Image (tube, rainbow, N blue to C red; front, side, top):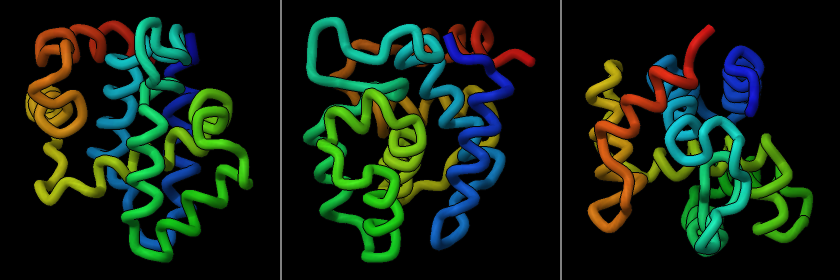
Length: 150
């Protein structure tokens, strides 16, 4: 399991390098919550049954879609963290790439990121896990309270 303070710092540092501001407190907290829910802060870096990889459990096809559909400045920024490594490998083993990719996934959502936990839980469910995912708002909230502690 990844240390909370160290993951917060890594997220903050990676997002600060983006070509345009994407690093507000709500975005940082949403990524922390996503890692708490999706992988229990790095307990799982490969989906047990399925193709998702990394602490944010992003499927390689989703990462490819994200890369292909970003504006040029963000596409180059994201690809720079991958260094021409295959997407599945980078999702699993490049924390910086996974952070950038997760933030870019949320950047595709037109709705602003809520500041509060309950709003972020609903946002994660609607836009990240979707109606097809098995995760719940209640699970997300429970996992944030469990893993996102100083």
